[in-house]
Length: 242
Image 1 (cartoon, rainbow, N blue to C red):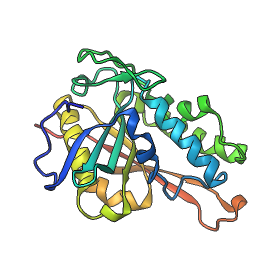
Image 2 (cartoon, one colour):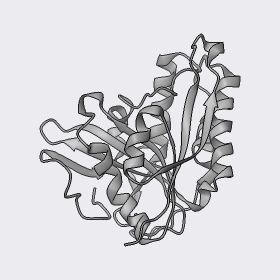
Image 3 (cartoon, rainbow, N blue to C red):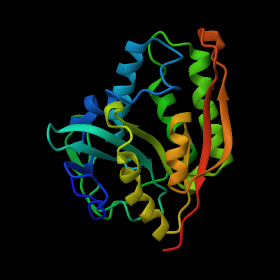
Image 4 (tube, one colour):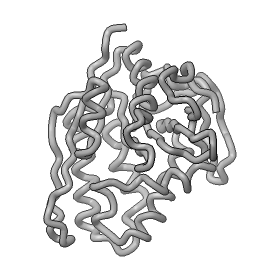
């Protein structure tokens, strides 16, 4: 799928960046777990639930997803999900919406995307409902916390990064930074702030791209037998001058 910007010059040789498609769902779900995922329920039902969430995003006009593929084997090694505000125009070129069967239903470069904003991650999960066997209170507590932070920091007016996933085998190669940089450059051109919720391992990467910590979201996991809380750092990046 065509990119709305030139191929990143800093992408290492042997890798290609493009848009995600419904055919990528299994590969995208294969390594999308993190320190704050899968702790409110059993792993296997959670994985099926997560795959369904990913599949449904391709039907949403407010979701844009990009991937980096290893040219040698065609495997996705990194991917990112963005929720752009309705006023952002730079990501529209080449954007496609798919139906439930994974068939394209719109490929208009002038497609008007609506803003998910504060309803993004929390609303998406609530619509699908909790995975089978989950601790319902912990499930809703997590996504209510996400929604509360997005409302507090006016995420509806910002470009929102909701996922960045890189295979463990490809950490340290700069793929995550390259995957994000071109989209952030578009945000700079349009004067848009960018919002995200970062796990501990992602903070330094985001700081290198200009994000700053503005808040913290912490979840008590003792009820699940885990001694340490799940902590998300709320980070915002202000647009840079061209």
